[in-house]
Amino acid sequence: MLLSDGDGLYLRKQTRDGASWTLRYQIAGREHWLTLGHYPDMSLAQARIEAREARVLLDKQQDLLAVRRATEAAQRQRGSFRELCEEWYWNEIIGRGIKHPSVPRRHLDKYLLPKLGRTAAAEVTAADVARVIDEVKGRAPTAANDLLRFTHRIFAFGVRRRMVPANPASGFSPRLDGGGTEKPRSRALRLDELAQLFEKVRETPSFGAANALALKLLLALCVRKGELLGGRWEEFDLDGSTPHGAVWHLPASRTKTATALDIPLVPEVVGWLRELKTVAASSEYLFPKRRRDPRERVPHVGLDTLNVALERVPHGLRSFTLHDLRRTARAHLAALGIRREVAERCLGHQLRGVEGTYDRHDYFKERRAALENWTALLLEAERGDRKVTAIGQRAEQRKAG
Image (tube, rainbow, N blue to C red; front, side, top):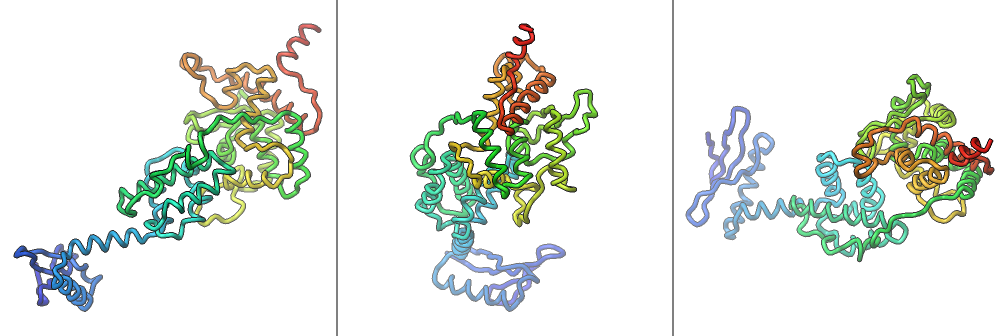
């Protein structure tokens, strides 16, 4: 049903509950209809103003639909880079169920949004992208490469959605503009370096008891930082109610390999966890939030918290990352005489090739024995002495005895 207000303006009754203001006009002898707005959201007075402005454009021989499309495109492009990033994150990362969404979230919050968040997305230039990457690649080349990849994907998403006219990161490459070709890291801390690290941590009161426990647990359990910091108390059996004793049931949803893993907990580690439970109070997480996070990036302590705390410890050691602690554990497991397949399973790695296809044994008992020996070595490093004997050497000593 159409109700005319004159000069081509109509109220079109579309459904039982809805109606819209519509302008009827002609171009080159052909009739067109343009929806101006919905009633009652748009009043009659406002509809008359919109119709009058449209007729002015018609008098100038302008296509109303083309003008509207251009206006809508301009409005989209005036959106901030923050808005583009958030839309990309929720559509491409969360919406697609990408594993470990905290990784791109961390790159957004730590690098991109503080520098470019308030800039209109369509106004971000290649020079802006280069400045952000250049500030990162000197100290964290791998992070710079990841950041460049995320930036390229964000703008590619914006181009597809017509939120930006072009991708300012399209001409960049990790090798030339990012952190360069990534080389496998080889850093592993020696026993004397571990002893020095533990000593300097004790001498730095601001490091905090929870961070000190996190550091020891990362080493003793051989797990990834995100797996530990995201741990829930419901995953842990500290009382050893199973035939296998105390254990951490790490769910598949939180492992890199998407495979659940039962991690044996040796008595010393159980003691550290009980200390941590006291510090965590009633939280469901081992490491609860320590300050309000308006963006709610993770429901537990921030993933960079331990990194920042460690950077403030004057340990005097050659540079290392928290992920290097896994390599440290693997190196010392080998030095202790732990069989390769057991050591690999201690780190949660899948066995490769034919061996991985046919060897489905989880080596739980062997892993418990290996972690007992490794934890004893850590405790001696923490005390500054060296008495632990490698498994192979102990076997030889028993034969000799």
